[in-house]
Structures are given as C-alpha cells and as structure tokens.
Image (cartoon, rainbow, N blue to C red; front, side):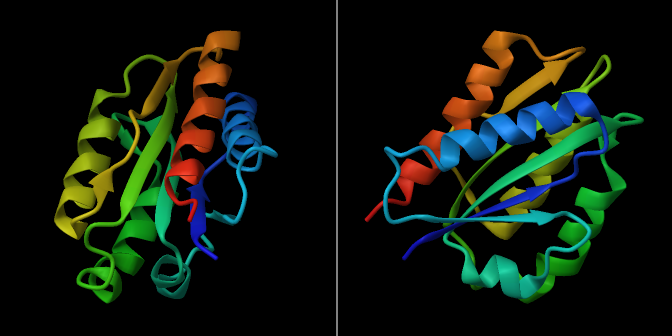
Length: 150
C-alpha cells in the first residue's frame, strides 16, 4: 500500500487548523489504498521518509524562514534519503503572520536538492486562515493522497 507521510510543525491554532484540513482531505472516503502517516517534524526519521511514497510538509514561517523543527527534519533526513527518494511527489503548506516567501524559498531549495517532484501547488496563508484557505488545505491533502492511489 502506498504511503503519504505528513511531516508537520503545528505550534499555533491557525496552523493546527490547516494541518487538520490537510489530514481530512488525505483521509477522505474517496481516497482508497493509501496509508496516511502523520509525524511531527521533530519526530520524523529517515526511516519514515524512506518508507513513504510521497510527502506533505507543513510549517509556520518564523523570522522569515521555515520553523526550526522542519529545518531539523531536513537536516536529519537529507543525506540518508538523498538518492533513495529522488522523483517522489511532495507539496507543502505554510502559515505566517505576514510574509512566507523566505519559507517557501527555503523548502523549495531543499526539496530540489533531494530531487522530489512537486505534485500539487502549495498552500500559503498569512493571518487567520479563511474558509477558502482551509478548503485549499483539504484539496491539497486529497490531491497528494490521490496521486498515490494504485
């Protein structure tokens, strides 16, 4: 069974709402035959990444960059997973108070180095997520999970 790994850092109610919408989309009844694994960024390991077929990353934008938790995740998995995960699909969602551009650039640089392939447009939100933002998160989760269906 293909596996979607959701690696997330959810320190605030706003990004928690985005995470929950992503999970709801990825686990909707229309998605069959895909195992959805959720791991906090500080707990996700190279083994988790190697066992997954696709990745959905979630983070806050902190001081113009991704959260330290997501950066540590990348630091821990980069070299152990570099060759084995090339070509696998990914996407991400980001929440920030004002600007998320540094965060998106950082994520995209790292995943480009890993050789992961964008599978769906990322969702970026500043301020409190709207209903449309949460629907976009739901769609993101559903789209990435559906792309892994056999």
